[in-house]
Length: 397
Image 1 (cartoon, rainbow, N blue to C red):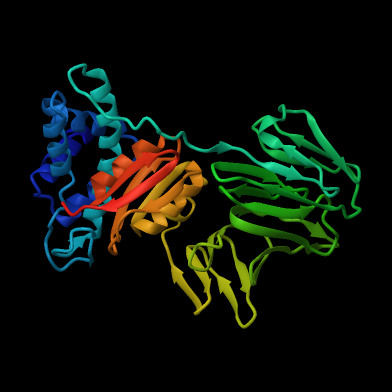
Image 2: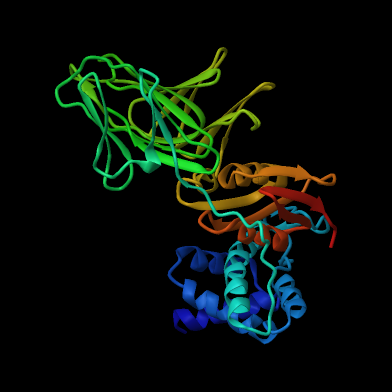
């Protein structure tokens, strides 16, 4: 049996709610690989095609597609909200995540192509964020980086030339100058993101509503930066006198000491603590009372009530850097904070939202209405976009 035939069989068994745990896991692996995306989309298209002319029937068929799989007992189980009935397998949730994303795209595509079908797209729909940032030089002068031409010199600080590279990054060219320079800051607004190549060659990706502050030329003994909001770091190794020059990230009441590694720091004021997640290498997180060495896939969380360290799946942590939203059994208010920052919209809760966790994956390049549609298919929370504000309410199905 070739791969396509096998996928068709697994998909058919999924629709019939007849997958075993091993078959469900196999289907997840196939979908995650991305190699069979067109086939998966075609299978969904075939399944829902008979309902495309009637929006109500289409919606019912879509919801049926997302029904949770009640697989064999005795495997790893979690409660997949909002359906607070039986416990379901985590792997079943993962299938629903990916199928939800595919079906959302198919729904938009098929209804637009079918003249007899009317799809309501909010008049106040919001476009996704993009590469937007401001560079604040040591003398206080501000430069709108998204308006600067590629390759053009932006400024000169202590003999260091600052340019916008061909791929849109901010880059420093210091030549032989090793004199410490004044502090520069790159800050992104809500609805913005940006990548900076620091004077030492280290790379920083800034998420929306974030900033990184650093000297135009690092001193010889250390490389120190200050982060607010969220940033992903790929730290370059720098040697001086046969010793590695440490790289230090300050964020709130903690500092991270690095020699060469990749990691993510989430230090938004409205989040539950400062989260440092190690992707590769080794970092030391130092707080007022604790020092913790992180290993890859470990996350350190500094909260007002204390600290914690745990092993995590790093993909949802760095989803923003890779251009996606990945919600893996995440509470709705946490999800909406991320969406609010990226689309630069306000949030209004019109009713009490229960402790509802949702799962889903969708590109951050989609319009806001697409993302909200996927969330509605995944749970019982409803959304309306009015005047750049998302109105959020709960309606049990």
